[in-house]
Length: 186
Image 1 (cartoon, rainbow, N blue to C red):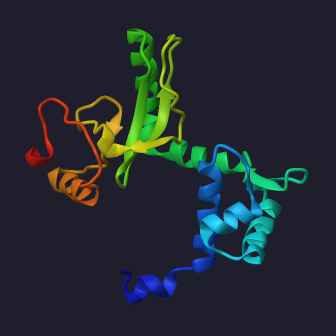
Image 2: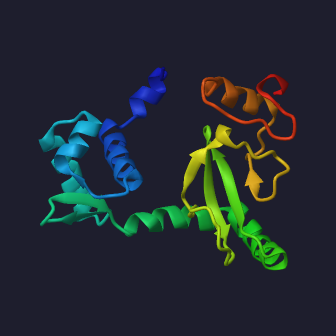
C-alpha cells in the first residue's frame, strides 16, 4: 500500500497512459480499441482519448483500415536513450564487442528489473542456432538466474537479501537450480 506522500504525487492518468503503452509494446500484433479497453478495464471513450493523445505525440501509430494501434518507433528512442546514457552500458559495450569477437559467441548485458531480467545490450554472432532475444526483451528471472559472477549480468549492487526478497515474491514460480544452488541455499 502506498503512503500518503506517494498517493498525493501519483498521477493516475499518466500511469494509465504508460500502461497502455506497455500493453501495446508487449503485443506482437496491433490491438483494437475494444481489445485495449477490455485488457485495461477502461471505457472505450477513455481509451480513445489516451490513444488520440499518444498518437498526436508520435508514440502510437494507428492503422485506419484495421482500426488498430501499435507503438511507434519513437518509443524506441526513449528506451535506447536510457540504455545508452547508462554508465553500465557505456562501460560494458566495448568489452562485450571484444569478447564476442574473441570467443565467436553471442554475449548479452542484462539487469535485474524486479523479478525479470531485462536485456540492455546484445552482441550477436552468425550461429545457426540462436535465441531470439533483442535489446529491451524481458525474461522471467527465476526461470534462469544468472549469478552475480555471470559475464554481462548486473544486479545493481544486490546482495543475498535482495535474492531472498525476489525468491519470496516468486516462490510459486518454477525454476531450476544452477551449480548446485537451490531455493533453500539462498
